Image (cartoon, rainbow, N blue to C red; front, side, top):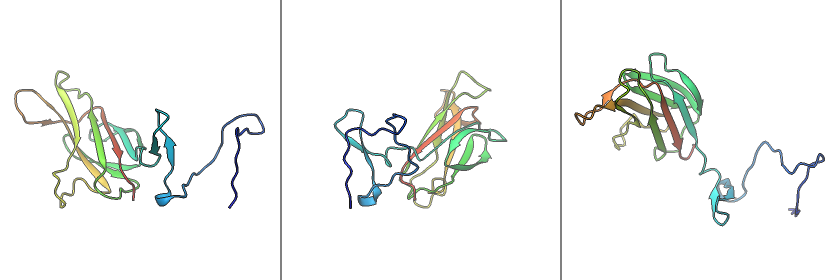
Length: 162
């Protein structure tokens, strides 16, 4: 094996960027560590990336504004949406963060969007291939969440892909 050591890399045009299509680590699990923002600690490139995200509208047509690693949305009723992944997760230990926006019917309420998961292994709402979400608002008069389709629904997912 050869080792190349340089102080500065320049292309023929003088630019100091390296253009490549693929990086692969040579250590266990092919990890690539990068220096973190503080300059002293390192972080795993693979672990630090979002593996899926979606910006969509909950409605009868479920309009997707933009997404990554989402193969489709399924309307399960008022405020209920399943997001299916193009590439599945390794296990159900991933984190799906959801954010709700406005809903045209009642702009005075606080809107919520969150993943459905009761924590039981038999729960089919939170799997390696999809996450079910519910959206709605709380009027503040009860502890019950009123389910409504949201105009702005945002989901970001971090975890290990299969």
